[in-house]
Length: 471
Image (cartoon, rainbow, N blue to C red; front, side, top):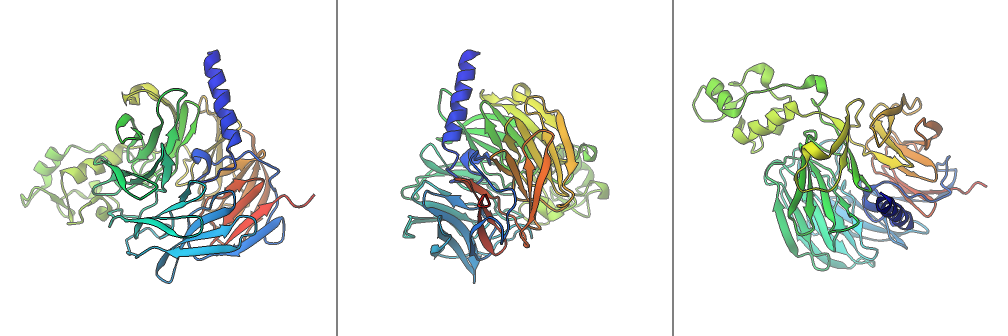
């Protein structure tokens, strides 16, 4: 027990020591936490503004080195990687990917939605309309790796990460889903792990580094969480996730927290459907071995047939039906998982599950012993991370908006950014209170970044840097 406490303390000290390294989506290992300060409570174009810089459209989040900020964007048919000076916001360079491919995507998605990752010198960016690109700090192209086209009904959304000296990218899609490991020095594919049981999802992986042993890459996907070794081998798996995952997991010590939501995943919407053989025998009237919309009974139809018809031939086959059937019994939830183990750990490592007011997109944040969730409509729930019990649930009265950016935390505060551009600052506590609501006047979809007592927020047209300047 004492050894476990010492390990946990050591990991906490390490996390605090590297809190300014906001080098990937949601900062240090995707936690969304940089406990530095002081951070501002009130801010806007005329309050606590350090600098602001105009940007082309894009929904990726800023990532930071000691001297630079990297983002992606798109303009005039080009997919752009942009570097800014961290101290002043001045644009240093922008580079366009070698080509651009137009792919289907949801209206809330964006050609520059995935967040880049940096090793502190170089930057690595992924575009669903091209693939991977890497530039050095001065903007010189290091390598490119075309990927796709992709069969993701809503467009790609997962961001690359660095783990075990490799660049990791998850490409979950409706046909031929896979995970990749790339040599960050030259763009060479080191391994490609097929994920045939998965359909389109958008979550960005995290890494679990136990006190002993090798790091494990944790990848949420449709219906299942999977832990992979850095050589691509499956270490463990846990079933029970929702059909379509968008948020990112959070690792704290030997626990992982995750929330997943998809349309039709509320507990009351479950529908037990028969297996493929029974469906085919009952409804395949023309005997072609597949089921068309006109053949299937109406009350068993998907809300969106085309999304479940993965090869887009107008019918469902056994594989399509298996995924649709799994979707109709999957449930939305926030869950806690004990990490470690091998093989199927579903029955042994699921610690608790909470199923009310689950965020549609925004990831949870665990901060100072409290788990925070924010759902569209401005509904905030705090949970006890040990038991999953509700500490408080309430509505952000001045921000009854959509919340697609994930909350971040630091300096005793939790920041929640709405799609309408209202940034709500909560006092970090299980019985949270609203300290301020700051209106930036235009939409926010990118998750803010925190470093060195500064808050970096991307809106539809610019990047803001705010600090606690009013003494």
